[in-house]
Image (cartoon, rainbow, N blue to C red):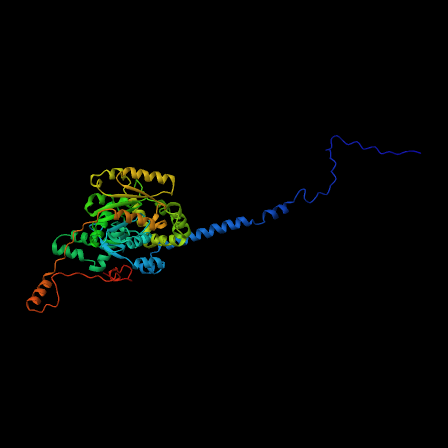
Length: 481
């Protein structure tokens, strides 16, 4: 039996060789995903990305609305009616006094509140930057119950005192301003007014044109009140003189010493004693003013009560709750108070040295007391000992509150002030009798000579009301006095 075998054909070496194709094997579905599967997975939305952009958008919109609302001025009466009831009650118990901080400016109104009998020792409390008389409400109430006449003052730019004022400034004298002036002159006097003046007088009326242009270019602008040591001295002296308080026991809190130090040295006869409450050796205060300057940060801090409360807890006092902090926030934010506080902070005497001030000749016999926080921080305790060393004749007393102890331990603070004041000899005041006007004295003499004396005497007194009639009508709601 024959076996037939096939031999492979020999290929022509000149022809290209063809490689045998590999046999196709089915692949597992998960081994090599196709491009369609990749696109499907990449197009799946990430929920974290959505919520990130959503939160960012809401935050930016909120900040935008806060910024816009802060730029729009609020009517003073509407602002007052929107205040919490505690602030409105505080305002109703006080009064405003007109003072002039600069010679060529209009008077401004300063808010004051007092408690206690007026015939006792007068204690005048000056708060630090960012605070107000409202923060000392419990202190003056406690002092009043102890028989001390306590007066708290809102510095200009703070609390219920004026925070801005109108000023006349020169307008623009550029090309557009001159063109607008010429246009108004033509409308008012006609096209040939200057030509008629040349014909009548023989000269161009330069002086009249310049005077009219200067007058027309002046415009009213609203500027925030900038309080410096000089303005502070004028304000403090006028308030004490108007209320007839001299001599006073002066209580200076926080940064108030840097503003009042010069006035104290110049008016030693008006000061009976000095009490410093957590006053640093420099002019700096507890409230960080830089927070009020940075746009986004200040909008966030002044826009939300809990954020402002958190800042006060970190920097000033741990006793602030959200409601109490909100009252301070409203006072600082309203009527452009933030700008006034920042401007005052820039005018502070940064070169003030408490050791040099304490070595002044006039302060050698001045009774002094330093009230200092014992538990705020180690660094702050060391600062307190530094202040006490700079004032060696002062009495150093610690308290359990923070850097704004009027919010933490108001009763404890009032007790220390009351004990210090009562330990000193009573103040001697010179009582000046008010002269009787000539026409009133003439009426008295005629009634006495005619035998119709109806019980009038040569002396008279002015009786004030129950307190409500003394309020200034600052917001169109109170009574003038």
